[in-house]
Every structure is written in C-alpha cells, then in structure tokens.
Image 1 (tube, rainbow, N blue to C red):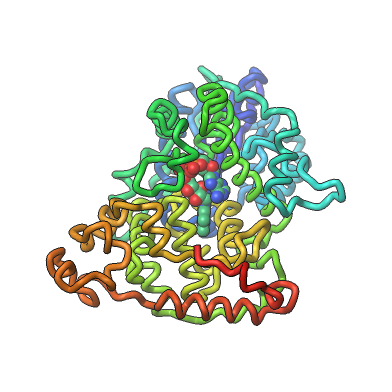
Image 2 (cartoon, protein in one colour; image 1 turned 30 degrees about the horizontal axis):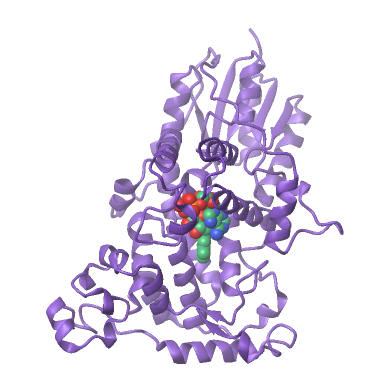
Length: 486
Ligand SMILES: Cc1cc2nc3c(=O)[nH]c(=O)nc-3n(C[C@H](O)[C@H](O)[C@H](O)COP(=O)(O)OP(=O)(O)OC[C@H]3O[C@@H](n4cnc5c(N)ncnc54)[C@H](O)[C@@H]3O)c2cc1C
C-alpha cells in the first residue's frame, strides 16, 4: 500500500488556495488531513467559538472529498510524530504560519519528523508577500506604512490561488480522532454566544458567501467613501474568515482585482489588505508586539490603574454613546467596526489612561477576528507607540467622531437601545440635552444610561500632560500647533 502524506491544518481552515493540501493531493499519495488541538488557552473565548464551527465546517468539506479530518490533542510535534509512525507517513505538508512563535514550532516539528525519515514541505499562504522579502535597503523592517506598501507593490503580484481539490485520495484505515465537540471550544456554563451565531457563518463557504455579497452589493465601489461609516454595511466583514484562514489573502486580492478592475474603491481596499501585511511584518520582527511598545519611551508612560473605568469601558457604560455602541457591538457580535475600534481604543488609552495592553487583551478575548498581528499592531498604533502610529497628541473626541461618522445616530440606536428615542442632535452627547428632550425619549441619565465617566476636556488635558512628561525627543518638544482634537 502507498505510504500516505499528512497535511497539517491550523489557522488555514480552507480547501481552496491551500498550497499544502494542493501539493499533497498532487503527490498521488493517500492524504491524511490533521488538526492538533494544543489547549494552552491561546485563543480568546469568541475565537474559540469561531474555531469550533470553523473546524466542523472544514471536517465536513474534507470528508465529502474523501479524506476525513483527524483531530488529535497534545503537543503538536509529539502528536504529529506519533501519527507519522502510526501511519507510516512519507511526508508532512504544511502552510507556514505568520506568527513567529508558531514558526519556531514549525522548525521543531520539521526537525523531529525529519529525524524519523519523514519529509517536511512548507508553503507560504498566510500573507500576500513573504515577510522576509520586505526589508528596507539597510536590512531592517519598514517603520512607515507608505514606504512599506510601495515596496510591496513593486514585488510581483501574489500568485493566483489554486482551486480546492475536487477529490482527495483518503487513507484506507480508520484512525482515532477526537470529536470536535470534545475539544471544549464552546462555553461550558451560560451560553452567551447567541449574538455570534445570529451574525456569522464560520467556515470557508460562509466566507465565500460574504465575499460574494461584498462584491455584488456595490460596497466595493463605495468602499473609499463608506468604509468609515459604522451605520452602513460599507466594509467586507471578512476579518474573522481571514483570521481563521477560511479565505486566503491571495483569493481576496485576485477576486477584488477581477471584479473591480480600475473602479473606485479597489485600490483603497487593497491598501487595507496592505495594512494587514504591515501588521504581520511587525509581528514577524517583534514577537512581543502585544506586550512591549515599539517606541521604548512608552515603557515609562504614567498609566493609571482605573479598575472602575476599565470595567465601564468593557461593559459599554462609559456615558459616551459611540464608545458604548462599539463595545456592545463587540460583546454581542464579536466584531466592531474599524472606525469605532479606533475611537473606543483611543478612549481607553487616552481618556482613561489605561495601559493599551489591557485593551489588547480584552479585544483578544472578545473578537471573533482576534489576530495576534492585527490586534497588537493596531493597539500600538492607537496608543501612539507603534510603527507609523497615530501621534499620541491626536486625541479622538468621541462626540465629534460620532457626529461625523454616525450623523443620524443610527449605529448608536442599534447598539445602545436605551438612547434610541433621542434625536440626532443629542444622541452623541445626551448629558447636554435639555431635560424635556431626555424625558420625551425616556432617558434618565445616571440611571437608564450613565453620565460620562470622565470629562472630555479634562481627560484630554490630562493625557497631553502625561505625554509631555515622556523623555524628550518623544514628547517634550511638542509644538502647540500640532495638538489636535480629532
Ligand atoms: C484597536 C484595534 C484592534 C484591532 N484588532 C484587530 C484584530 O484583532 N483582527 C483583525 O483582523 N483586525 C483588527 N483590527 C483592524 C480592523 O479594525 C479590522 O480588520 C476590520 O475592522 C475588519 O473589518 P472588515 O473585514 O469589514 O474590514 P475591511 O474594511 O473590509 O478590510 C478588509 C480586510 O483588510 C484588513 N484590514 C482592514 N483594516 C485593517 C487594519 N487597520 N489593520 C490591519 N488589517 C486591516 C482586515 O484583514 C480586513 O478584514 C483592529 C483595529 C483596531 C483599531
């Protein structure tokens, strides 16, 4: 009997644009797809919910093509080595992970399997471009996005994605496999996942449907103008599908290029994929991106330990409707619009002076698209300590942001229903509304809806003072004219 080959699935839970699976299928050998569950609590609760459903969908797709998914628990290198011995596998095929600690693990896996006589083949699939291909002339990582993206655009276009194999030659012997339900990915106590289930369809087919809807619904054409509007369906909402590798970035790149051509929105959308690349390259060069600021001066930032403020922020009860709408959208659906992520994150870091790492961890636990690179790099960007970051002295005014990007208050009305009766004029600043307007809308401030946990003007002045106290060269010489209230 021909010796089989193993295909190791991780956060690449798809069949199309999957070079490892394509190579295994092309080898003509029986294919054993495998997923190893290493439960070290790396994923947050919302991502675990997604992973459960994503794996279920993947297993169905693989079984339908003739090669059932083998699910094992334990340390990846040991579990794969044991499976290779058990099946007499000739080779292991895997897509390289973008996360540096997983790349280290890949190296350990490869060394162990090769020592057993098993060939190991790895392929790029998680990003459009290989991080190592993207260095400045002096050999360092890029710190400025525009230069980074220019360098990316000078590389050959990402290769077109391979289609999903139609059939796979399965392994004739039955192999022990853990049921996905036994992995403990779903919450064991109170089931809080109803909003997630109502919002999303995890899995490759769910991602493909979302992409088709984005392309056919006109959102791509209007993307540049609408992407900042949380009250509109102006973005693709593909981030969790990308985070779990249910759709590959190359598939997205080519689909958008093919559908959109030179139409408006296309270049802007590709640039957002460029930010994803930029985040991944940052993580590649800085494995501790979620803990340590890229600008060392921020190690000395005088953060506050505001437990009550942090709790109010997490629960969407800061008294600032746009921030609260975002935090509740996150809690109910596992996702938040990008503009609101920026405002809510800025509020935690600048209005409350809570360390950005606390916010990063909360997002990690509650986002279905939680992604080690995108999350950490964006938190550093918001906090002003990351690569090409928003300057610390640019402090989002949550009222002005609400009036600009949710002008009719529709986004707030959906996620903060207790304010739904307020007219647009007051919905982003209910504490300034006349008593008669509040009474007419049934809003009792301090009871039904909180008063602001902090005054904007005071918080802004406090943040700027803290920033100015940083070592010179980072803040001390800040010109007054540069300070703005966005
Ligand atoms: C504080 C903060 C934390 C974030 N945490 C995450 C996270 O954990 N996971 C995550 O995928 N994104 C994160 N983002 C980036 C961004 O908010 C989401 O990718 C985006 O909102 C997803 O919605 P979409 O798929 O509709 O985006 P679209 O506008 O349709 O964009 C398409 C894709 O481009 C990528 N992209 C878009 N904007 C960014 C960006 N600013 N940085 C990196 N990639 C981007 C995403 O992969 C996204 O799916 C974070 C942003 C902020 C400000």
